[in-house]
Image (cartoon, rainbow, N blue to C red; front, side):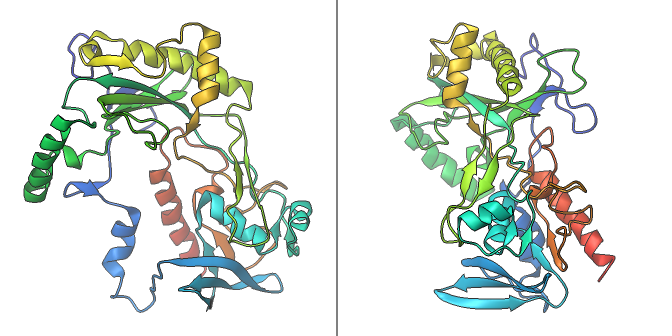
Length: 370
């Protein structure tokens, strides 16, 4: 569709003006994903005396002397181990586990902590609140082309060739990040910035790929970039052994649903374009969706996460803020949060680069005082 001369669209831009559709930038090297761990940690493991990476460990609580964080308690290989900090504890457990670890350590909404049997060290009501994610809907289409990822006898033969090609040259289908194309669109031309994002995928995606289809196909995600709904992360019990209770509150605010209704219609028009018509064999999820009420119903039934959660330890200076502009936890000493949980609001796009930027900025903040 992007290459079709009769249906040309502006490529997405990565500055102030986002609007457009095209091929996404990715963090790859030599034909495979290049993660933040490989970029920042792996080159220094074993070469720096001030870096120790312990995998397979579970942080269970933070240690305090008064209101100063002095260390972390972990379990590793069935044994408890204490790591003490000489200067600060940097908490980077992510949008779900960072607030959980704070709360089991006694930092969070006092009433909630009392309900699950946690002794309150510091009443900080914003911990775990303000959860945001891009609510996402996926269109899925079966296709006859073996150029798309899928399950079939022909695919197994081709995949064998692709594995050999990848091992020899690090090229071919196995270098794909699957969500190769997409873009940022306005559901209303009068908007100052795009309010929906698309991810075009070269395979069928159903229930986070837990449901498999014996077919080849393609999918297209559409998500609302600036949701107004706010969820929360709370405790089920007083320790880290129990997973937290995560309520994303998708579509709780009516505006989010209506944005996705408009995004649904816009995406469907793109999927119905002649450039894709020759590929399509069957519409798997929306063939019987015709009216606005049909659209709302299928959105309520199928909207899910696109893995962009943020905000559960948000930065700010108001009573519901968890960290200050230097990422220090309000009311405590020696404790910072450095991950996507500190974002006050969602960014209008994927969160990976923004999370890395937060860490880069945190390095500068820490250097100024140590």
